[in-house]
Length: 422
Image (tube, rainbow, N blue to C red; front, side, top):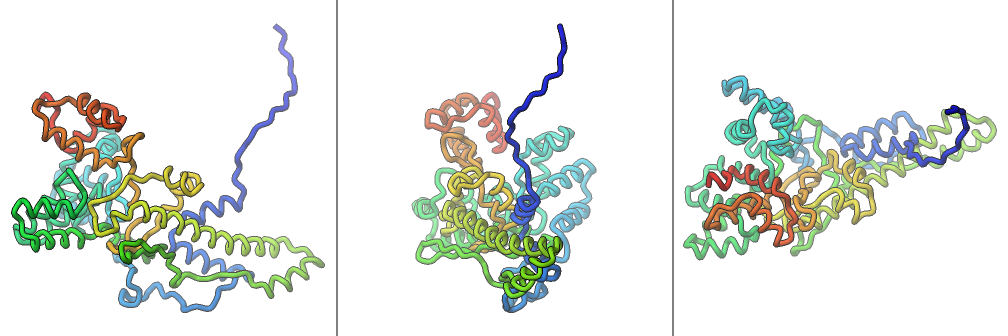
């Protein structure tokens, strides 16, 4: 068989990142504090960027002057590691605790499942060992609520540490442990019918509402955590604003640009031309970044209005993909926007991404917590033990389209034994 060399021409589509596009992507990921620092640096080095006159933002201002600053002398991780070291634990528990602490986000939330941590530790430690350290050690560290996996668990941990009358604590636990509804009014009515006083129920609900849903932010080692978005509720209507206070307003210095442009016609200068391009890019990119962050934040808040409407038990399934489709953006763009972006809410300053909860079903919107509640309800009401496969079939008849392994995973999270051991 003869071998011959032949020239061939093929058309291929290829996506390449231009320097400006890469810079725009990097800008989108910056936190508000990092962005302000970048703008200030650009103003110092680029004569074509000018800042409109406004009251200079002092990052050393006191909490009384700027009511949503959060400063710290040590990081959350440093604080938690110190507490673990003081407990005198054995080496295995210390190793597990450190992995869990390293897996927490800025707010103190553990996004990884226990089985994911098990894999991260190369299966050196068993699922139950990891969960035991999480519940018995991490959940008992300060600040209260650290290591929570969902807002309900965050509240439950904090309630357990509050010095409350026994009756109020029992009512609060009943509200948090009930699985049939997340409607506070409905829960209140059921408790009244059970014989509890309305005043005691209201007190328990008030204690639940007063819990900090981002306990780790008080220890995050950043100069300041500054929210980009602020929301408020007026007459059950959600109002969203981009926080313009203390954010530098920048423009192109048109007078200087006009003078330099005339000179560049006579004597081209590559460095000056690049400075002009950089200035124009910065002004337009900052505006686009802020507009996009606001659109994403506003949509998230609208989707989670029940959660902000005085009901910390209610949070709806929401994913990057769903936001991307509704806003006409790419899911990766949404991911970059959510990085280190904060929102000032009636419940305190929170990470914007903490309001996203994936649905475990492709056909129906159901959060992991809601699925666990459904599984627990089925197990509580069963006359004869039902296998995970049987539970999956029962839920799939309701349109959930869940695999047996999914049921097994969340049954284990509930510490419910298998059907053979029930």
